[in-house]
Image 1 (cartoon, rainbow, N blue to C red):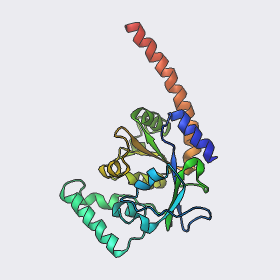
Image 2: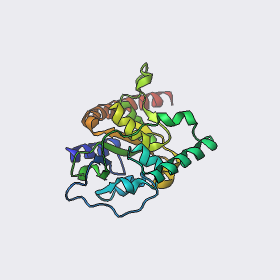
Image 3: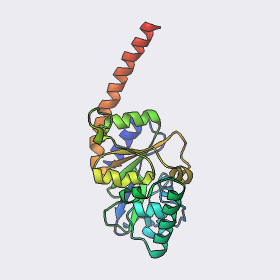
Image 4: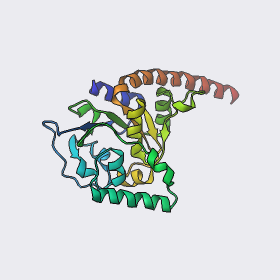
Length: 234
């Protein structure tokens, strides 16, 4: 099923970067190698996952205290201190305010590490799927995720910094989310500046797939309608 869902996402959204997936696990699955990469951020692993499947234990995330905190890992004393220092700097430069910090979501699922990889290649069921979207792709995604419905302001799910917080937000809310991104994500992942991050809880991936099929067809019909209008006025 993971192969099929990945193929549909790529086809319907015309993705040029394969969907990647994360699985939060208590132990390294048999047959999955532990990464030996040393990375500056948790989100760096998202890009590594485009090339291979691997397992990263909690401590591999500790160079990024914000990301490790959002992923919900137990932080040793030194990492906790680094987290406090990072948050302090963010507050000092007015990047965030102190009252925001308690509201930043965390992944609550028990875990000692994360399995990363392309969605179609992950050997176990993922918890979330990550997509890199252009504005047009984000439009279709948002409509398919029911995020464009008027009269349902609470249903809108587009986040900003930190970008990785979209992962626990999607898991807690049980619905697809998007993040415009943050400076850290864009620095560490080196993603193209016109891309947004979309997060799909695996439990809702098939529902989103079906909705996308309908939304893509609806938009094709509306584009034909608008093209006709444009030609008549021209």
